[in-house]
Length: 161
Image 1 (spheres, rainbow, N blue to C red):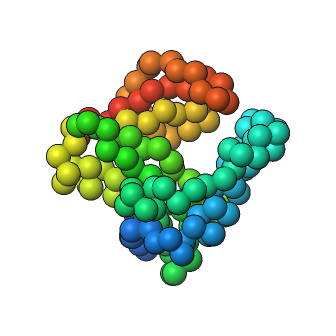
Image 2 (image 1 turned 120 degrees about the vertical axis):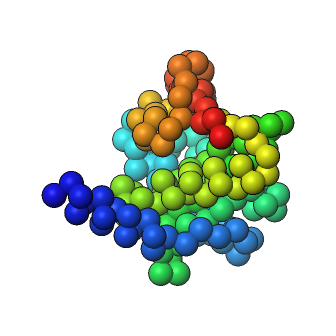
Image 3 (image 1 turned 60 degrees about the vertical axis):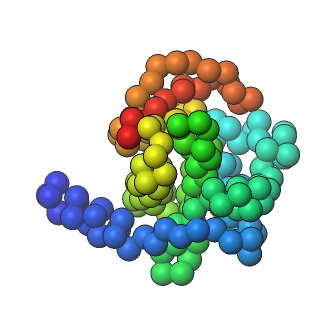
């Protein structure tokens, strides 16, 4: 049964197209950003009290740092990876709640890793909130440095390339 599950997951990942974002994507990306952010019950109240944190601007698109995940032409997620010296910082990783746990985030991270290696980066860094740290660990990130974010504690993690 495990083998069949892994084959199914591989099929799902294979169907995900990752492409460069365009300015006309901003509306859909903003909806994904908001829906995904509010899907976490632990953050919802604080986010609704600070709606300015639910606004996605076009900076990462204009800078060429935002990549979009599509399935059958439907935008389902995105990741922003910004160069920082020899590192690339994974600033955003959001998947629409209807598409979570279907390989989209894994595929976006794989795309970022491939592009970072090709650009000569030595590692990818991310600040993981408590509910995302298990995902990042499963993706190969390591780290124990506790940091404070606007929404509470986080862990600074790195993936060596």
